[in-house]
Image (cartoon, rainbow, N blue to C red; front, side):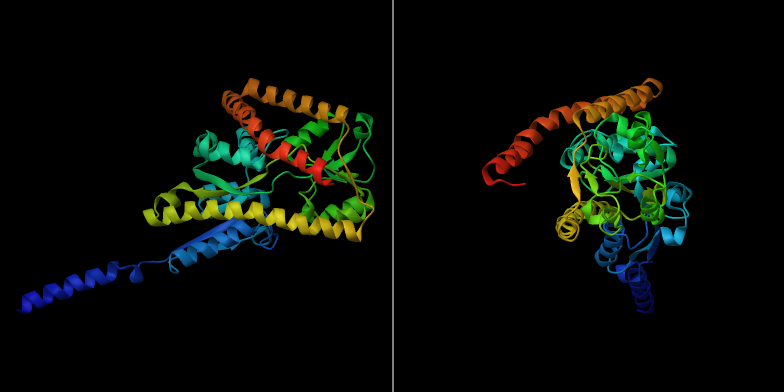
Length: 358
């Protein structure tokens, strides 16, 4: 009887130790490329951390650390790769200097819309190529939230022709910066905290940021009245980065929670940013009626498109994977755009004509 009792006590102890209540907590850190309070860019990581804590009953804790803590906004990939942070939240096109193929997973000039790009990610070959590109860094990359079509920027003077771009000093990053530079613009990259002062003092003549929802916080409209519609970032996707070794050690249910959670908060960022822009634009128009919304002249837009294609071809001629992804991307965009035009464009066009929407 004593032996049986001891055996039961041993089995009971083992069961107790292996129940979820006694499971060891998982504690991760996530580094951001932006301040932790810069919504909606910071919203997905903050919301993901909250979701993981709730879904795991407090067993999976993610500590979010913004750029104000890490002091290395453009060092997130390296921090996740090294394992000093298990996760990161950034923008894939920031790593163009490490690998030009990373740009495809944020956005490219004249590229897909948000809906088209998400379809390519999840129902085309986008995620397959994303994994292939990031495998060599020892990290997984997942979509991390989209801004939708970004505006073309705030300008102190109107752009009437290509000549107006010559010598113009502008803050504009990524591929778009390369395009503008080819058209004669003096491109610079200034930290976000210095942008308003630089524009106000004439250090720069123009800049692009995101759209009304985020631009209103920066106050650019107070000193640069010309607000141009977009061409360069039609579907700017943020990214979640995860250290492969850390992810592979997770229990299967936590992997599922994490992947599902990332997809949910990424979708929510697009909604949040859209809602913010609706509200912000109404406020801007009311408080600063002198804002002039413009679209670049057709000759300028055509020159931007040609410069984009030229630069893409140059990269493709030197990088076989870049060419492969570009070919697949263009094919999907061409196929998807037919439906976008039928469903979105023609509806909006009809709505404008029938209801007089401005």
